[in-house]
Amino acid sequence: MNVVSHYLNSMGGFMLLALPLWILLRTLWLMHKQQSPRWGRELLLALLVLYCIGLASQTLLQGYARPDFSDLQALIARATQRWETGWGINLTPGYTIRSMLEKGSHGQKVINLAGNVLIFAPFGFLPPLLWQRWRHLWAVVPLSAGVSCLIEFLQLFLGRSVDVDDVILNTLGGLLGYLLFCFIPKKLKK
Image 1 (tube, rainbow, N blue to C red):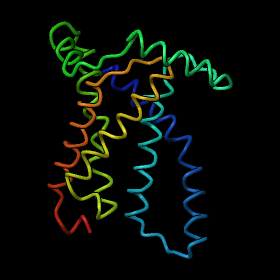
Image 2 (cartoon, helix red, strand yellow; image 1 turned 45 degrees about the vertical axis):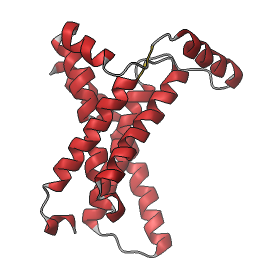
Image 3 (spheres, rainbow, N blue to C red; image 1 turned 60 degrees about the horizontal axis):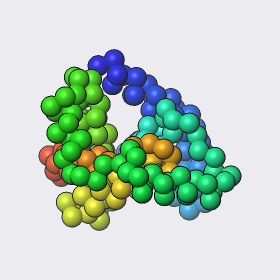
Image 4 (cartoon, one colour; image 1 turned 120 degrees about the horizontal axis):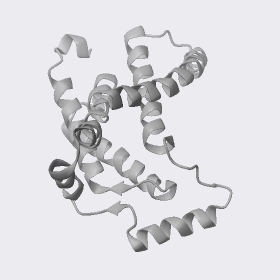
């Protein structure tokens, strides 16, 4: 559980830094639109935005040397080389999951398997609470898979591992979040 608390603390730090900026921007937006805030909705929207910032902090910013974006051509060349050699890339569905279950330590299983599922549960839960059009399984699953694919694609350029099993587990997490949403009474969804 020490590893889980480390990730939550790290995400929380980024989220706390972003909170005042979100409050300011959202307040200005509501004033511009001359709308009164609905506090339940505003809280859910803030949770979604802060969650996305926390997710980006762990999947795109943490633990690796920052790439030099000033030399975009070199960045693309390194990503192309990684793609051609397959370095740090798994495109075989189930390979990493099977390896973790067979050989991984308890901590690796929690972070890699359970973590990849749980970290995407909010994508299945929060958008349906906020917007009517996301209240369908056929909307939530592609959202979760699409965001996960985008993260894996960006990780190719960042030197981080790229793994189809992360997409599978993340999408499963979105599905889990949607199932939790389905158990919320209709009164609360409104």
